[in-house]
Length: 223
Length: 223
Image 1 (cartoon, chains in turn red, brown):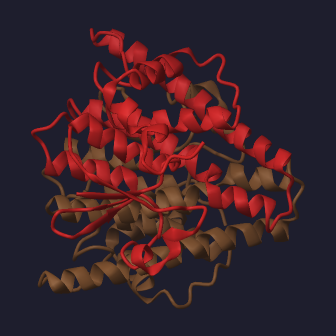
Image 2 (tube, rainbow over the protein chains, first blue to last red):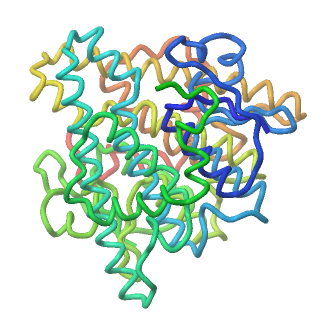
């Protein structure tokens, strides 16, 4: 398979984590967002949203939207570790955590929205950073509250405390959280007072899968 | 089951469509967003993000994040029409379309982001509307391009043209698209030049499920 991605893209990072965790090999094809390579026909003619990542399958199909790609990987390669383990309730919990990042934090803060704030709307870099920090912190506080609720639910069900976002293995939720924390650190978001979230992040970051998937490990990485 | 929701919330509307399409009964429990009822403990103590919708199951569990709720409904009630029919590829296509709305359009334009633009950032109502229209139109154009790509893919595979977003029944993709178009119409977004998208919308809007789920059919509907 070929993964069209960019080292610093959160959504790309999600898919890299999943593929590393599942032990699936891929060719790394960089798409340089700052040089707008994603808008060139070689890429954009294959994916309607012209956003990274896109996974080109061995059959030559281009799959897009990172969470949909990870769900597909789980369905197409069921013999590898699942990113959505457990019963329907566990899967609902994992998906909701992933969506809490993918729908409530990341979209408001991605490159094109930040560029619109400083471009079309004429805001300063400081105002842009404040915007980022506001939505990221607000979203991570919600994520933390959800982890608190889930910890109580697990306890009531007699389940062991989670080591990662949910349970004792990397899931779709960690695929979403880890890149968001990476980005939060870049933008100097206050990460104090988020003990369950940061414990899950630290546990995930220590895994081989995340170490191999992280931006600094990418062929197109830049300082 | 009890659906905690708000008539005008897009994410609530998504779940209503799925439940109507699957023929699942629910008690409608209104949470008035403009009165900030979602931040009161009766609601917010059950869901980390304090966002509607939340589905309270017959077991007293509260499920959140609309797309995760719909996936759960499909897994918990497999004997009803599936919102994710087909093989792994079909499901990847459907999920990616839903996420194209849920991650690329809706979050940038929801109530709290618009309120931040006119509040903290001091923009005018006209600038707020321009923001909405920009991101909604940009996202729907991407959605249209994806439908064009998928139409060609279906043709190459010998599949009939889609009547809805994907195939001949309502799916998760329609659950996401229909509320977005409803919202786009409220904000007077230009919907010209989106033939496949609008045909899918019209087909979905004509179904009994969407007619029963639409905002004007809700007990808490206001003009």
